[in-house]
Length: 137
Image (spheres, rainbow, N blue to C red):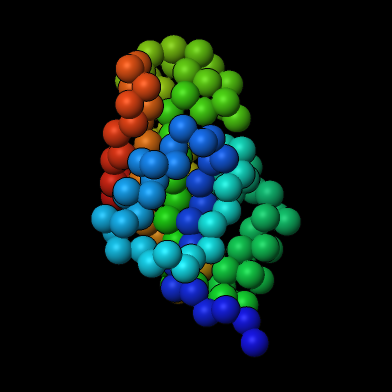
C-alpha cells in the first residue's frame, strides 16, 4: 500500500531557504508528512518542459500519493539561473524575473486540473535575510 499524502512541495535545493520555507509551510498548514522535491532551480524543470519530471509528478504525486495541493517555491539569487547577475542585476529585477518564472511553472501545472497550486517566492535580501511572499495567480 502506498502513502496517501495531501501535499507536495517543489522547491530549490538551496539550503539558505530551509528555515524560511519550513516557517511558510507551517503558516500554510502543510502537515509534516508531505512529498518534497528539492531540485536545482526548484520548479524550473516544469518551465523547461522536462517530460520525465512531469511524468514523475503524474505517477508519484497524483496517482500514487493522491496529492491534492502542490506548493511551488521559487527564489531570487538562484544559482540554477545564474544568480542575480543573470536575472536583471538588481534585487527588484531579479524578484520580477523569478515571479514570472513562478507563474510559468504554475501554468505548466495546469495539465493537472485536480491539483490546487500554491505559489511562494523567497526573496533573498542583500543582508541575506529571506522574506517569503505568497503569490496569487
